[in-house]
Image 1 (cartoon, rainbow, N blue to C red):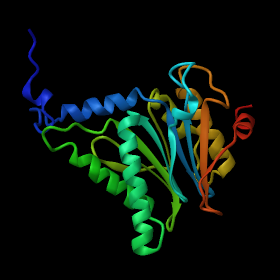
Image 2: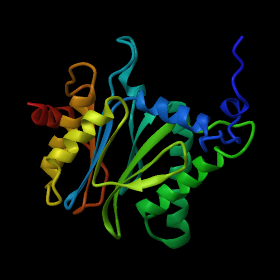
Image 3: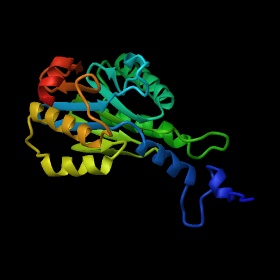
Length: 234
């Protein structure tokens, strides 16, 4: 009978190669998650996600991948929704606490660092496991439009455009080819939707692709209506 090595079972033990296998397993879980995309533009930020329910009988209202965290800030998730729910709850509390303490909206990077610290703590204590979710944080703060990611290892990174989840390599290749620093908001929406289509296993439509934006002009989160998304798909 095969017995896994100690460093394969315990999250607190490094392998001889310097790897934490439980963290890597969590990252592999994210790669099997729903495709999500974040794109930053000088005119705002875009989040797009494939929200195809796992069953035709499932209410799509309960299969969300894009969540509002504050007026100026939103997140898309890929991985375990149950784990994401905990981090989203913490993020919303932190956003409100920042307003109460400092009378201003939280910076996107500060929130990403806070969530990264929480995720990292779950990689170094026995009796727990890493969060099996990667989040794309997108918003407009005092520094401008920002897109950052946090992953199960606790690391956070900033991007101009990023795809996470299934077939993320193909989607990121598309983003690298078509993204430009001066992209406008409408073209950013088109690009995000196209990247989601590339990463999806089946055909998508306005009911399964969801898009949210935070324009620089208003700094207010907005979900696009199905008719608007259909126009971009067409």
